[in-house]
Every structure is written in C-alpha cells, then in structure tokens.
Length: 520
Image 1: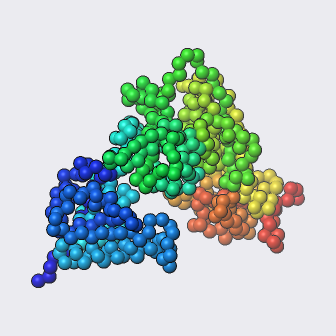
Image 2 (image 1 turned 180 degrees about the vertical axis):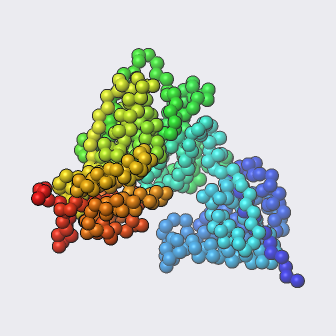
Image 3 (image 1 turned 45 degrees about the vertical axis):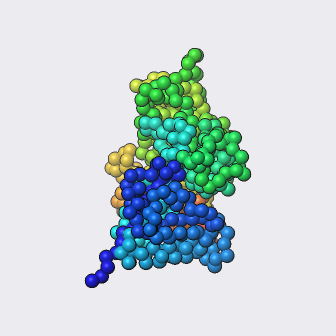
C-alpha cells in the first residue's frame, strides 16, 4: 500500500507581532511535523522568530536560506537564475517530506500571497499535493494601524506599488490614486521620495518601519534619513492627503469619479470664485516632439488634467498637478467635470490625442457647455489649442497624399447611424476626394470597414492608392501602401488610420505617395 502524500500549508503569520498570528495559523503550526521558513543571507529567519513559541519541540525544521538578496551574483544565470535554482532546491527538499506523507507548514511573513516568496512554492506544488493557504495580516495593515490614519474612505481607490518601479511611472501612479502603499524600499527610498514629490504627494506621506514589532517607528517621509531605511519598511499615503477631508466628505458625500458628476468635495468659503479659462489641448499622435510649444507651456501651468486615461498618462507628472483619467466613452461627462472645476476657479486642461478639434474632446466640451440645464457653463471661456492630427501624421510619413482637396470620416457609428456614414462615403467617392478614415474598425465593430471598401469600389478603381498607417509616431509604427481592391480589411483595427487616394493620387518608384494640387 502506498503512503498517502502530505499536505502543504502556507501560513501567514503577520508582520511581526506574534499576537497578530491567527488562531488557524497557530493551530496548524502547533501540529506540524515539518516547519519550513525562509531566511536572508547571513540573517536570522524573521518568520521563525515571529512563530518561535508555537513550533513543536519535535518538529523537523527546514531553513530555506536565500543565496542572494540583491541583483549581484556570480551565478551563470544571473540573479534570476540564482533564485530559480534556489526554488528548485526548496521544492526538492519539501517534496521529499510531502512524498513521505509528512505535512509541511511553510511560515510566511505578512500575507503569503502579497509579495511573498512562498507563492513560488505554491505555484510548484498546487498540482502535485494538497495545498492550503492561510491568510495573514499584511505589513501595510499593521503600518496603517501604527500611524494611525485612515488609508482610504468611501469610494477612494487604494493602489499598492513596489518602490522598484521606474521613478516617472511611480510618480504617475501616485498622482492618479487616492490612497497608496509603497513596498520594497531600502535602496529605492531616494527615488521613491522623489516620485512622491513629483506627484505632489510628499506632504502627508508617512514612513513606517518594522510595523507591529518592538522597534517600530514612523515619521513623515520628508524627515527620513535615506541611509537608515531597512528592508522592513514601507510608505503609507493616506487618501485624505490627496485632498483635505471636508465636512461633507466626513458625512458620506459622494466622491467624484470620471464617469459621474458630484458636488465639489471642498467647499470654498468667502468670496465667490471666478470661472477660469478652460483649455482643450491636442497632444498630437504620440511623440514628444509633435507636442506644440503652446500646448507644452499650457500643460506646465494648469492644476488639473482631464481626459481619456492613455492621453492623461502622456502628460508629465509634476508637483501640484492632479490627473483625472476615465474611459473612452464618457466624453460629455468628462467635459462637465472639467467645466465644474473651471467654474470653481481651478486651472484645467482637457487633453485629446492628435488634434482636439478632429474627432476629439473640443466638440464634447462645447456640447456640454451649451447644455441649457447648466447655464452657468456659459460664463466659462473655452480655448482650444491645436495639435498635430493623426491624418496629418500619416500623410507626412507617406509623402503628400492630402496635398489636394480631401475629406475625413469616422467609421464609428456610436454617435451617428451607419446609413449617415454610407451617404457621406458615397458623396466623397463621387466627388473624387482623397479620404482620411478614422476609427476604421474595433474588436466589436468589424463590418463597417468591409462595407466602406464595397461602397468605394462602386465609384473608384480597384487600383486606387490606399495608405495604411498604424501607431504612427510611436515605437511600433508601421506604414504600408496598397490599393483599394487589395486592401486586407482583416488587418485593420482602431490603431490604424487609412488614407484613400483620389483618381489622381500617385505612387512614385521610391514609395512616396502624393496627390497633385491641380485637377485636369
């Protein structure tokens, strides 16, 4: 008869205080025939120290000591290779006990699956042995209790960030969230502090060291000596530090989200604020060099940036800038929110990719401003700052295909019925105009570009020149020249912009596409 295999229990034992170990974890540790725990290079195991009083006298102990704790190693596979070999060894050692029918309890600091090393053994064992994970109190929960400060309230968003992120990315994410926890400090601390300052979140950010342990301490991040930061430390950025907690907020009033309007969180007292000019800024198709000096100067002065998330992410983070990102189908709600901010005297920029006036946010802002239910919006001056449009960018890459009369059409039928699009396509084809096509296809909308090709072929030669630009201006840019008859519609998506030539559009031997300015 074969011996039944043992079970693998990964037990969260909390951040350091033995009294924070759960009753279930205590029971499993106390009955375990095998106790495993990780240990740092030349260091006592922190996990074993926390649970020491619970480990049975007769238990077999397996110390899993890391071969390396930083990126420096002489292993032929580098740091990743050294750790992979280490986890292979851990797997073999613990599997020998499990195959022999002995249960194994692996002690895990904090919560096992929250940046924990134990998750790699869970991955390896879950298909071989019975696996149980017992959650534990994560370090950030103990740190928040240590401060103590409310981390997030009501509809606040909490973001957990590793301090190892690139500094600009860390600053962007800090600016875009309410509350935040930053893990993995140590040598990353100077860059983390710099990112907090760039995001305008340094004030109110709290450094917590060895939370729940006898040596615990906390102080404002701005006052921390960077040379003294140990591994067992983190930063808590309370949601209230993103904005003062007003009386309305404390009573439970709604917090604005980009998809819904709400009353202002901060009630201004004294004189009535005067509306400020609302800017609508075209960011161009992508490259920083295509952002106009006018737009760049405006973005350096505003207090708020509002827009579709990928466009908001292109605006460099700096102290004092608040970013309000939302999805791609809430343009009018987004515009109303920006108008509300401007009405309160805030300096606001609504951003769009390409040119804001070409299938962008400019029209949405004017639509919202003209709402008769909100006559107060009429007091807000709106200024549109132009940008390089996608059709210009693709045309420039190809040569000069829009050097003569041309039209642009969006194939999206989200805001207009498809029969309207069909009539416009026929009129453009009959007029022999060069045609720029925005939003040609998406994952859920594949038929329109096929219908467009059929409609145009009723009036145009199959040899009509077609330029397909994809992600023009970005690292993954591609440009191809084909014909209307040979156009592969299956390869077209929202990242593409099409330029369909007139009967006079030419392709030179070197691939340049251009349309003569004259008509014969």
